[in-house]
Length: 295
Image (spheres, rainbow, N blue to C red):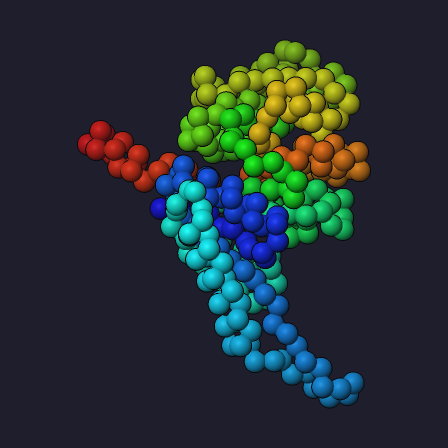
């Protein structure tokens, strides 16, 4: 059973992420793992005296009690009924979440975010930004003002690189489960790429996906501007991209203009790791059916 991790801090943003996570888990036949990370309180006894930590078991017990009550409310009121597990962790949020991803074989993280400090963080939020850069699995970022809606149109912002086939395999599975359309979008900045070059790179990347992925190419001054325009014109519900050290990732999120354009979209964004495990979204019963057909 697929495990989707949802960090919970009881904010409106995390509740919105949970609502989307319940929808996704119900379609994938998966389960949700809710995690609340708390900071153990510290008591300073004096300027020249040692630092004493308050009893952690009390803090953890309170955090666990609050999360258990929250999960009971979710189980009672959620329209999409899926198995729910929960845990509390103490310490650095990102560090604890990354450890939990590995330990629990998490297939996807779904996290709500509110804008903060840096340019990238103003799009994602500090915690989300670090998770996007370091998580070995896809991270679905849900902006605070994102509208909760059915995912029917997915767009993948592409640099037309061969290694993006990994991301497209994940997205084609997602497309099937949501009965959505999937478009690969290439933004030709200032028309620098010729049509022949774009065509060759597109065909090389999409040869294994037949009719599963539509292709669109538009000219724009920046990748973010092109993506924003395409999303508006085609009323997309989800924007996906691959995280890398440079290239399209930098073009999308590392300038004030790009930031403003993407903030105005108010759409969930799916960050797919360039390296790390490929997420298998097939339902377990579908795998069993396929296995029986092949044997």
